[in-house]
Length: 390
Image 1 (tube, one colour):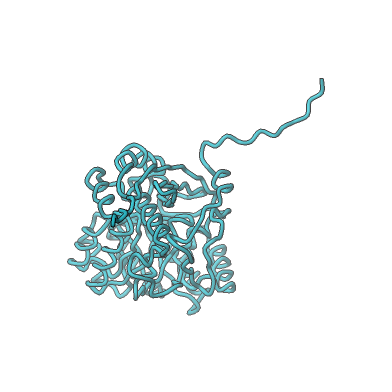
Image 2 (cartoon, helix red, strand yellow):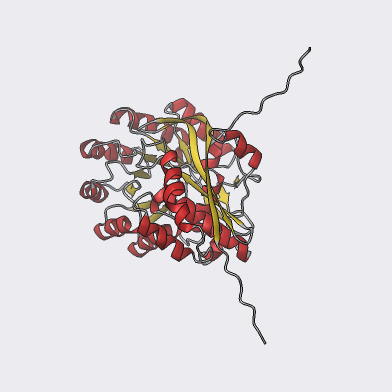
């Protein structure tokens, strides 16, 4: 009796496009003010007809890090896509190793492609991406909201609205653009307004030098801030460790974490109290899971970070973080809420102070093609027909 051999599902084609989404308000960071977020959407088409979705997103173009939407797309189109076409779609480890050997750096581009591979595999198997990583231990995670208008009264009004709607009870303030004293006064006004109804953290995005940071952490600790994220240059590991040792306020590493090697060094040196784990910054879901494991083994806090992804990237991170038993600092997977429009057919669900895991195989999300087409960079606007008389 002849046994039929299952035909291998192959990667047929990797497609990319850039989508420019306007934000609901100016998002003020220490290095830039964002009014538009540009994301790279990835579709991988497989030989069995299935399709996997991925997303690559940076913050503020090149002002935040070394990748931009344009470089992400170029890395995928020029180097990653040709290498993957014809490869086994179900062997994600082999595909990921192939990419990592051939493409140095570019963690966001690699993450976008890897996400689409996991999504495609989950769809073919009829299971969620969370199930592929061992299964979800929770279906909802606390989600912080970033207060980043730069105006104290506006931020307080925004926080009050979020508390009233039961959407967020943790707020992260973006500071570092003003001098330290003004920033602490700004944060203090918000802390006084919300009281014990919410947890307040701040993100300095590397804006301080170590002398400003010493003064800043003392002031933030005094007014009741729970945590400060990446107060100084990511390269200053020793100084970050001295700040971690010198204050009761928790210090979190973010830009200093570019994957498992960085995570291991910080854990070994006790260079931070917590890790902001970002799948894009880590280089993909698999490397992100390794960063989480290192943090767990070292007894460090875990925070589900964001690169301000839209629905696809946020869903991918949510699937990974749903498999983590203890997320002491929660997440900041609020990206889709920052945009004026939604590009998913069914938006992610935010309620009762949490973001909830979508149902369905793979990532459990589908793109709204009309919305994607509307915001696609370089699209040709439809020409309205007009009647003419002869």
